[in-house]
Length: 116
Image 1 (tube, rainbow, N blue to C red):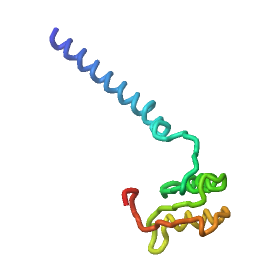
Image 2 (image 1 turned 90 degrees about the horizontal axis):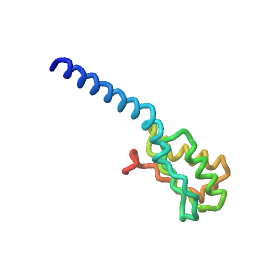
Image 3 (image 1 turned 180 degrees about the vertical axis):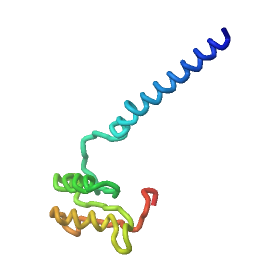
């Protein structure tokens, strides 16, 4: 009788663990980006800060905001990738190709991490 009860508790524990893992893996984990992203309407600002770390969507969005008049300056941040190439310099070149002028860009190309 005691062995049967222990097995029942063990099976219940395993099932509960599997349900928690499934919930986390299939429901919670895929929705984390939606939880962390904001959908606030843009407001007028002194500058638009663009951090490196994606495939170009951030700089594209920043240039769109700049052209819509939310600011007249971009602060582009991104440290070294190769010897003399920085993420910030690549984003600057892309912004210029989208008709942003050099005097609208402030480059911060020394940091290697967000904290820096």
